[in-house]
Structures are given as structure tokens and as C-alpha cells.
Image 1 (cartoon, rainbow over the protein chains, first blue to last red):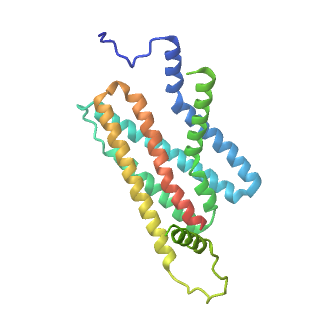
Image 2: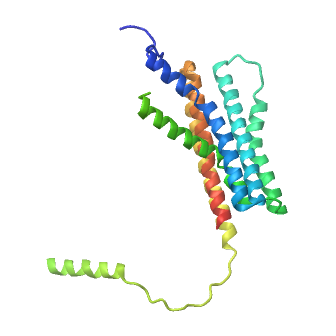
Length: 148
Length: 99
């Protein structure tokens, strides 16, 4: 029985697949930027500035939220993999909890002041979901087309 | 006996399909039940999402501890999982505001 690691890609085809799937996170971030820009312009043109601004604000919060999730997950993974680290995990845990505080505070201010549309804000919060769905569709297309 | 059971089944089917009379009733009394329902819906959604996130994080932690070499893939799956689970609570929030 050979003791070679079965998870390590060896053929060029496997290496190509590995590099393609490794770039998924950066593609999702790029997709979020593109979807936010395109959808904000469309909403501004269709429903006016109040809804458009709400949507842009929602996209901003969703983007910050997504970045904070990544940072927190990175910190947790560091703690697990490097068990002897002396760095305290309080900062990442605080930012993980602060995300909900930020969301609640912005929603409350908008709800009370009616400066921008709350519906637009709520729609903007779904930006990561839209980007992930688009990435899933792209990966399915590439898998079927190139057999990765 | 067989005929009787068939007749009973047909009768039950007709009762299920029967349309009640559309008579006008009294005006519904105003209640304060909606905010309670919204709060309950949000509480259930948040609680279940928290359970889901906890299970996802626990599974990812275990997988990372067993196989630190697969960190990139596990981390990416966890990020996507957490983002998608959070969106489920957002769906409830949207439904509450849309109602």
C-alpha cells in the first residue's frame, strides 16, 4: 500500500481544478462588487435615489459583514491549527458579535428617520447570497464545460 | 360492506371539496397579535440559525483539527455556510417587513 497522500493533486488536470476552485473566494468578492454596482445603478434608475441609496447602504453592510465573517473564521482557524499561539481571540470574537450590533443600529436609524428606504437596505443585505449563487452557477458551467 | 365503505369514502371526499358559504361575517376585531407573531417568527428563525451556525462551526473545527492540511477548503466552506445560514434569518426579517 503506497503511503502517498491521496488528497495532493498530481496530474495537470487536477492541478488546474485545484487552482480554479482555490480562486472561488476572490471571485465571489469581485462578483459582489460588480453585482452591487450594476444593481445600484439599475435601482437608482428604476426606483429613485431613496431606494437606490438604501440598496447601496445594504450592499456596504453586507460587504463589511462578509469580510468580518472571513476575518473571524481566519482567527478561529489560526487558534485551532496553531494551538500554541499567544494571540488573544477576544478581538475576532468581539467583531463577530459586533456585526449584529452594526446591522441593528443602521436598521434602527433608517427605520426611525426614513432618510433611505428600508426595503432597499434589506434587498442590499442579500448581496453575498447573490454573489455565491452566481459563483455556483459559474462553477457548474465550468465543471460541465471543461470537466473540472 | 364494500359498497358502504365506498359510499363513506365518496362522502368524505365530497365534504373535503365542499365550499363553505361566502356569507359576510362580522368585522374582525383588532388585535395586537401581529407584533407578538413577528417577534416569535424572528426568535424561531434566529434560534434555528444559531443552531445551524453552531453545528457548522463545530464540524469545521473538528475537520480542521483532524486535517490541518485541508484548511483552505474547510475555511472557505465554513465562510459560505455561515453567510448562507445568516441569510435565512434575513429572509424572515424581510417577510416581517413586507407583511
